[in-house]
Image (cartoon, rainbow, N blue to C red; front, side, top):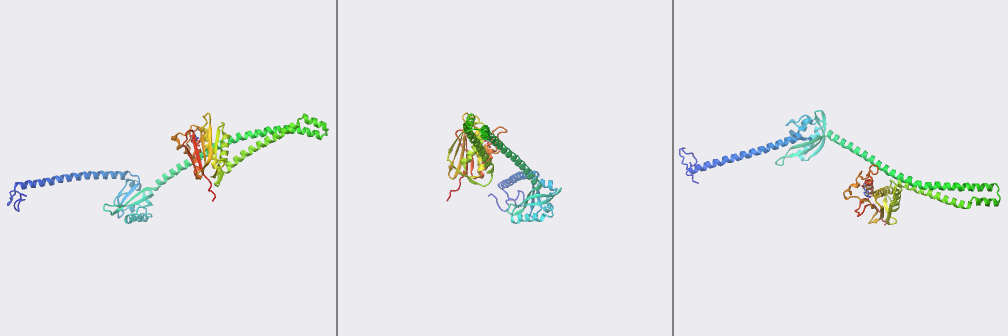
Length: 443
Ligand code: ADP
């Protein structure tokens, strides 16, 4: 340094001052530096202030427009900050007032305890408390959380809440639409049931018509034979001679008539038996709809299902069955028959426009499961729809023909049984596989 003596920093002209020029230059440079530092500091302060201001405005706008109630309180539970919604609903948000002024007398002890818990133990809580509002009391669903300051100390608490009436209104709206949806669903399920009932009845009517007309025609033939026999017996009773009776027997061709009578009787019995079988099938279908899970033969159930669907179908479709002669599965037979009828009906619908329609049914077992695979040579299911076809109400069929519930109900039934219903990858047409649990092997 170029300072000389103890008075080096005194201004020139001061008695005793002996300041050199270099020293002055240094002093001026130091002042300059301090000044520019001050300017930079001031600039930084202004930027910070602007940032702080923007942040405050941002916070204020959030506080003003948030619909939930937000209250920030200090350690003495005095309001430090409140959202606009507080003033709108409760008519008071005076900063600095104790939050107890907002709560009803009855509920304050509970809120106070929750606030203490938040501040002292730093444990957030949720409670329902009544607040004094402009129109009396408003129950509020309240969450209280501790507010931690910079140095990790508890500075107070933050209360957020929503009027329960609003929540209840929203909930009841939700419940209403849920109820409506349920009603619509029940209605559609009923429609689906009616539709399958309609198909079933058409099948029953068609199928019963055949054997009944058979029985009817045969009883006609029996009546004719009975008349001839009556004629013969009348002659016997009138005391006709043996020769006369032989002649009458020949003229009435009674020997042939006896043969006809036997045939007519057999025919009528066959017809009646077929009617009995149909009724038996029907009884089984309705009686086994619910009840306990029990072992049953999938092959006969599938056969019954095929018969039903065939009865209702106008076209003759070739059905190729393969697999084992008997496959025991565990479940509710009636439900499974319904699932299979639905798969067969879908297959029959799918091959409607096909020149040589063919449906394949394979029944067997894999691992510890029984399965039925239903395939058809229809157009198949486009990959984009593979997941959608199991959705309730999804249908590509015309109005009145499909309800779109068949596969979704069938899928649900399969799952209830602990089995599955899947659409398989097929090179031609569509292929669905139903799996069901097989009975436990005997030890
Ligand atoms: P629905 O038969 O009333 O339409 P489903 O739930 O049984 O209701 O079937 C839904 C849809 O899945 C059908 O409309 C059809 O588009 C498709 N689908 C079902 N089975 C087949 C199949 N075998 N081949 C092609 N598409 C099928």
